Length: 87
Image 1 (cartoon, rainbow, N blue to C red):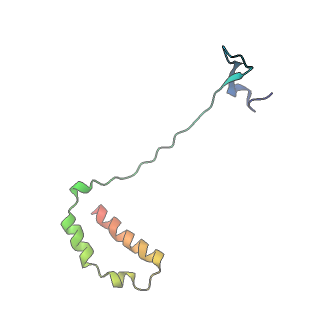
Image 2: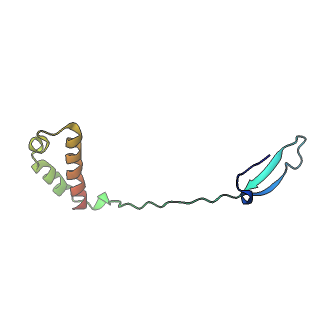
Image 3: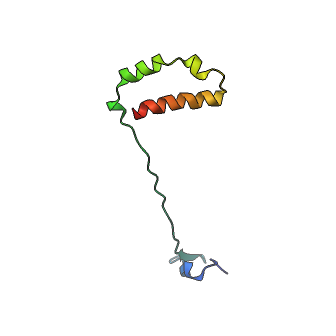
């Protein structure tokens, strides 16, 4: 019986100690990788909520969304919010 295509992957093959059954045990060496993901996290406690609210109220939403599809409206809205986050 073959446990792996790579001979060096299987480190040890044995039987389960103290068992009345014929059970096999084996150890397989595997290599794993971990990808790290970095992203910006905003601290909203430091946000100037009055300024954000004022800017959102000053936008003419009908003009901003005029002639856009639902997807395009979402992207325009998202762009406004993300712009305010970076301010």
